[in-house]
Length: 167
Figure 1 (cartoon, rainbow, N blue to C red):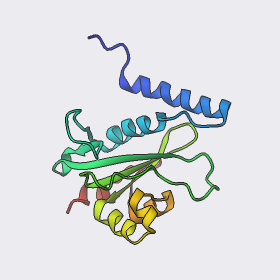
Figure 2: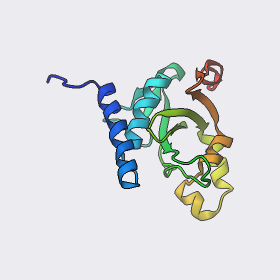
Figure 3: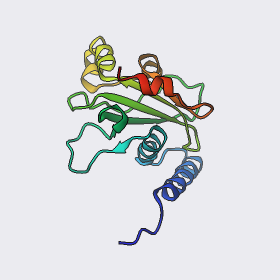
């Protein structure tokens, strides 16, 4: 099969389409942000996508950290002043080692990526209300407190944080 477009070209077009859709209709285009975030996290953090036949619960592995299984979440921040933004439900009952949260601007461009370890997330969720705990619900603000910044648009990948997490 001949590949007509590179993934980078398609993601670039998806960014433009998603941003234009939101500006025109006032609501996000469903599912597109998650796909863009997955692509960005894999590219920017040097991850490998999960094999299609692998069990669910995670989206990528980190070959530099012995195949660490990473769940990837995203949030587009349209208004910095609006609080209470939440990330998608975490698959608490599945096998994964950490969660990466890709924060994107209104143009669906990443500006920060945070990572939180499974045990830190489970510890916080276990102390939350039963309904939140059951759903694995977290706010963006709480995720930033639990996790650590591993990549930013201004500084790129922070090798001290990213490389030393597993130790």
